[in-house]
Each structure stands twice: as structure tokens, then as C-alpha cells.
Image (tube, rainbow, N blue to C red; front, side):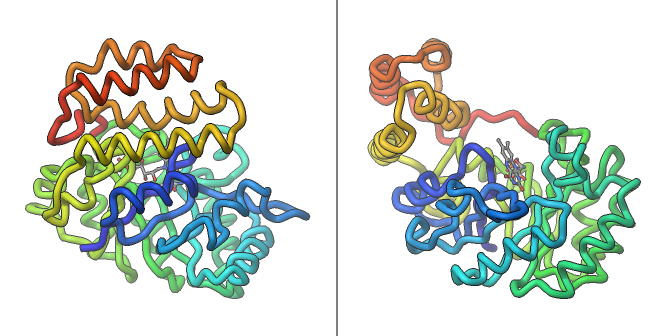
Length: 321
Ligand SMILES: Cc1cc2nc3c(=O)[nH]c(=O)nc-3n(C[C@H](O)[C@H](O)[C@H](O)COP(=O)(O)O)c2cc1C
């Protein structure tokens, strides 16, 4: 089985990926958080930084695009081809209201937009210079929408179908619909990668004891909470305190240098710690301080206390599914 790091907007940027790969090797493939190609200047400078090969050394990376405009998708793909990429991923899963209202992300798989999706797929699959994989949800509000969607995907030479088996209305909560994953596995023309529901080694064992084992699984929040999860799934060691501390420290220093100013730096660090704190027991007091602080000094003192005092768990204490 291959292990892939899910795209996570606001979390898995180029810096995070580079340091994750350095301190916790064992992930076979990373995806960029979604990039939104636009008219004129196709990618923003921040988006270009995400995909520049020198910012992703030694990493197998697939860039992800979020758009419902075939021309913008193809313009983005052409730039990615010139940078040396061979595959691009289409985001059909983003549930954010501002995104879906424009017919992008999971908005493009809403049943009322089926013709729009068909026209979009016709155009990108007929002239994209790169292979295209798709990351999708089951539908808008009912998993019963999925068979018709899969029937449509099956008409195109999709490289891989990455399935997050929830509907848009679930956002990121509630159980993943594994019966829909089973359906996808047996009815998809292309290999299916499961995204969602795996945050611990035991989740993987439980799921694949009664569901078909895919070629790849994609790990998201569970892998941010426990950066060694992919290695553990391959029989390797869990994260030790010293490596975690070094990872956090380098991430903090580089983030502070990149973002100029305590406010954005704190914001970014708290996004990571929202997940990482789940790997520690007796975390309530430290987490309260970390969540509230706007001071880099207090942040550093609290993180030092976390590493000094809090017991490290064998598995992250997650309850998303
Ligand atoms: C904060 C956050 C940001 C995300 N950003 C993206 C994104 O940019 N592109 C995407 O396809 N999915 C995105 N996702 C969805 C994840 O890739 C993944 O499919 C989902 O979290 C389920 O997997 P998990 O339970 O392993 O986290 C995001 C999820 C979260 C929680």
C-alpha cells in the first residue's frame, strides 16, 4: 500500500511538506493544497512558490487545481507541465460555501450542475498535457448521488480517483461512508484511493479487515496530528519527543522568517498545533494558553512546557469519524 499526504489548505504548504519529509520520511506522495488558476496571471506568487521544484526537494508532489473554468485549468496545467510535473489533481471536494456557490470544488458535483461538469471534463480531458487525477466527495447531500457521478468519471481516462466518502453537507464530520467506498472500488475503471477515516494504525486495520484494500490511502488530519503515522502504518517507529521538538522548532523559525510579524506567525502555528496537541495527554492547560496567546515569547515558553511536561501518546486522540 502507498501512503499519500492529503492536500490541506492552510496546513500542508511547501514549508510544512519539506520539513515533514525531512523529519518524518515515509510518505510516498504529497499533494499541494488547492491552487486557483485565474485569468491573466494564472497563479499568484504564493501559489507559484508552492509548486517550484526547488521548494519541494526530493518530494513526489502532485499539484491540485480548484476551478470550474476549463480554460483556467488548462492554463494552469501548461505552467505545471513546464515546471516538470506529469500529473495534476482536480479538486471536486472543497465544501466551503464561497467555493461551492461559484460552482467550484464540491459545487461542481452538485446534481444540478451535471451538464456543466460534463462539459468541463470533456474539455480538460481532451487537451490537458498532463495526466489528471480527481479528488471527489460522494455528492451534495446524499450518498445515493454517487453512482451517477462515478458513471460520468468512468467515461474519462482518470489517472486515480481519490474518494473522500462524505457528501458536501457533511463537511468534515460524521462517519465516512465505507459502503460507498466499496461501491467505488468495485465499479471504478480507475484505481480508487481512500481519503478520510484513517487517523490511527488501528483505523487502517479495522477498515481493511472488512473492506477492499486500495493501492493507496490518503492521510490528512491524522497525519498532521501524528506526523509519524505513515511510518507507523508501515511497521516503523512512532514520533519521538526530540524529533517532534526539532520539527516544530524549525517550522516555527522558518514561518516567523517568512511571515514577518507575530500575528500571522501565531495564526499559522496554532493551525498546526490544533492537530499536533492531540498527540499529548494532559494537554488542556497548555492548549488554552497556546490558543489565546498573541506573543511569540509566550508561545515558545508554552511549547517548551508541552515538550518538557506532557506525556506523549502512542496514538493521537482524535474523534473526527
Ligand atoms: C483544514 C483542511 C484543509 C483542507 N484542504 C483541502 C484542499 O486544499 N484540497 C483538498 O482536496 N482537500 C482538502 N481537505 C480535505 C482533506 O484532503 C481530506 O480529504 C479530509 O480531511 C479527509 O481526510 P482526513 O480524515 O484524513 O483528514 C482539507 C481538510 C481540512 C481539514
